Length: 300
Image (cartoon, rainbow, N blue to C red; front, top):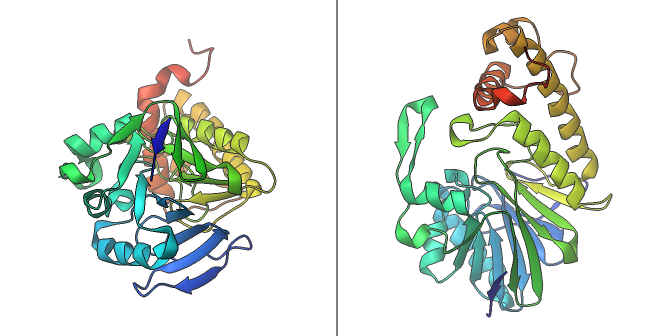
């Protein structure tokens, strides 16, 4: 294990308790756990006797607000001693450098470190994200599962294979029955697949199944974007995406493009509507390209 010595989220499960001086919304999820919303992806702050554990660090444009809000929340618990990145997108890593420079141990999946160290291509904008500075890079990595111990808190970390990118992880906080799911869970926005970065619909369905296995009826799940939710919402998203997976497989076997699927109204009659169905289907369709052997076991 890894041992260390030292947007508004409205939901029946967690109501805003304050607005930090930085303008970010502070939501209490459990006695020792707060969510900072409004700085890109949600930032989860866990207070321990040895300092703060922070999950994700928001967008770079909000870096100063994030660092200020963390100092405000620090109080008697002290500064951030551990930062976990749920994946490598910019909305999750914007204050990495600032917190790393202050001495925080940065923890992430092996593939997240690889991406942040090398930079990556973004097909939608035909551009490249540059590598992050050395201080912003994860200093502790794992591949399948790991444990992070800070003060009296013990956290479980695990890989969510190809859920949204190739480097997604969950963070389970057993003492509080909270699971931080990153962008593997999307209760508010259209579920997104970074197909060029290794995410795909099949991986997402598997990840949601794993998230369900990690919790019970009282578990609170924190997504990267949107409100804190319970098991019912995670189950609903799993069932929705599994139904879409099955429909896409049928249409792929007919040789359909994403545009064909949109015209065939593939997303109609589902319990959830999509803000941008064309983009959702395009990204989902592209993700299947690397997984043609998983369509069905009776392909001629």
